[in-house]
View 1 (cartoon, rainbow, N blue to C red):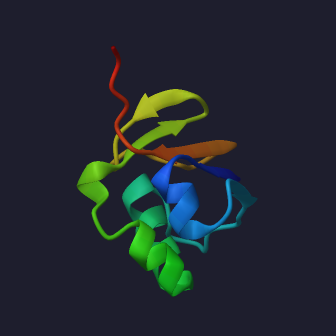
View 2: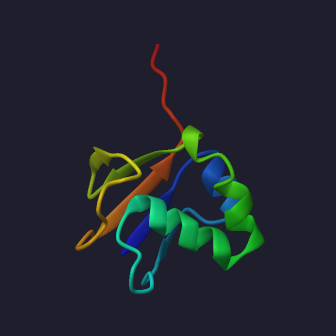
View 3: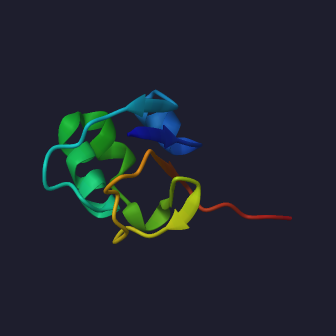
Length: 83
């Protein structure tokens, strides 16, 4: 699946996107983020405050309990405000 990172997540991780194959058992957004945090310190730093992160699965807004099984794209981004 393709992961997309926006704003300060992209800055902390150092890339805007990547293709990953999460290990067996990683079936929700929360589990995906937990797995990413174990990969490298930059991911742990980026995801230290998950309450400040929003998610979209295949361009549909979702929450951390949402399933990623069969997802082609998961986007992670900070809250957006309008004006």
